[in-house]
Length: 628
Image 1 (cartoon, rainbow, N blue to C red):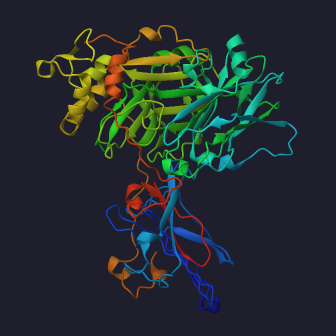
Image 2 (image 1 turned 60 degrees about the vertical axis):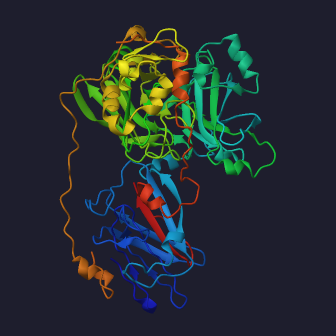
Image 3 (image 1 turned 30 degrees about the horizontal axis):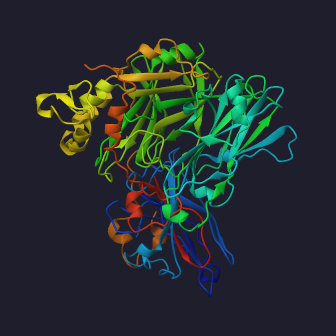
């Protein structure tokens, strides 16, 4: 704690945080006073943060001017205060702030002393606090770096919450020698575009087919992902998601670009306005010219980088039951595919992007070697649809040929009344981890899986479907005979039979999907049937913290006069559109709201999983919280 007594003013720092960290700043008209209290909010408590008992933050600087209050502090990434603090990790953190025009009583610790705390809640912003490297931009005066803007051309934005997938081909024929892509970032055509843009993915196309040339001359066209265009565009060059400010490559790698190797690049843009009310404010149809800005250089890095997509293939067979707090889905990249594609020395994964849609809560990239599970390559227990970015790993992770890589996604479907299916739109769900690695190989760019049809039916208690029936009818077991598949999905007792469903989907067979850069299937993988691995040695995270000792009893801390300075069997049917149609008619069509730019209500602090302290405002008091 630091104190300044000039003019009777004191700075105080009380350092702790559980679900949020809260700080209170006050500016006095007579003498500029700065009072800081570290508070926390309980999960079942009201919206007013409580003063925290343990002190783990150190004030380094605090000052005010006519417009701002500025605080600089430090703390350990893990304070080992499990009761009130949250460790700062590579997880997504939400910065949630409160402010009010009326000052709270100076130094008060009693409950109910903050003016209208429920009304003071405001938006939150998701961030990954450990990613400072993303701020390192290439110098605009560096003649070794070239900049290229890839923009869409007058794309008419969709009405309401209707999604739009737009593909535009670019021809890059003036890059006559090998360069390395070292950074990319979004280009927003206007402030309105921000509300519509969900994802932008740049694909590298192999070959020089006449269709590629024709597409490059077009304005663009609607598409449902790069695979919907039957061309060899299955290698991802760059991927941006909502909330990201771009990605900067580390010094040891860059993505190779050269016209003689690949001169056509397909940019796929996903537009989806999750706030339909926003579109109603604009009477005219809006057109968009957003895109990506890429930075590349002829000064080559030591390694060529590549991107490997791991996860669940976007398909109706990915079923997420309604009304559940925790649903686990797994996308498997099997050892047969990594064994075929990875170089003998293996690959080094240095960054990942973990992707779900609106009900995703947690994503983990697991690594299994033979029957031993290694530490997770990446793990985010607070995934947020409003901020899904490539994040650098603290250290690169080595993956060998024959490793199995599993994208494990956890969803909270408690707000949904009907099933949610896998797919590309925001109403559907996704489970994908994009990995940046070196050295690059082209044999495997997509390594996904999909539950087999027998697994899907078994998970619903269905033994056999009737042949040549439309709509699809169940023939066995007898108690379900004659029922349509759609009716079974609606009538399934998810509340009492969810456990059986979850076990069937996790232990049942699946179809591996392994593709290379030219849209070629990894030889032999199309005939494989995959199963979960029997792991004999599991990974357990080591606990490094001991219980903390508090410096004062609760009665002293909460006393009105307390001096806070003292407180320290079925066949696979790949193209059965009838079955898919029955499943989709039973899915959830709800579009859940998300916090990114919208105002938060009283319940936000209970619904969010993390909030963190940020910077101040002028003469208003401020509460800023960190939550995971």
